[in-house]
Length: 197
Image (cartoon, rainbow, N blue to C red; front, top):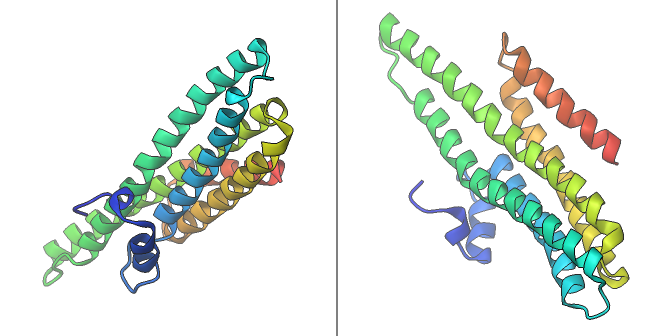
């Protein structure tokens, strides 16, 4: 991938996602959705911090929380492009030559490696989205009442994004035997989603 998805206009991103191109796909779009959900929570914090009615103790807590939210957002922003890159690497492995036994063995080994990497990427998105869910729960009672709906909307996007990211991981996990850590990681994320609903 030559340019970041973040460099695309909203319309370009929408059209690329709706096209027959394999990327951006479920993992990267889950990351975009989670980023937007996190941004809504950050917006609610900023609106509250800008209010003269916010007491200093609450403001200090929110400023600290905002740093956490910005760090999560940074992780998600990176994860969006990472998901595209690892999927493209997986597709390159599938295109490797397979004319003889040696080439077939090399291709199979490369596909296995890239499938693992392509499974980790959406799991990373799900984990970051779920961290942002916990962040949203922590700040919800602290923000102004008229922007709590934005925190809740952000949380809904985050939970949906985490679920969507797991759906993307599931496609790869179905063909990965002997990777119990990845299956366990997926299950932990799914359990966290169910707990948060």
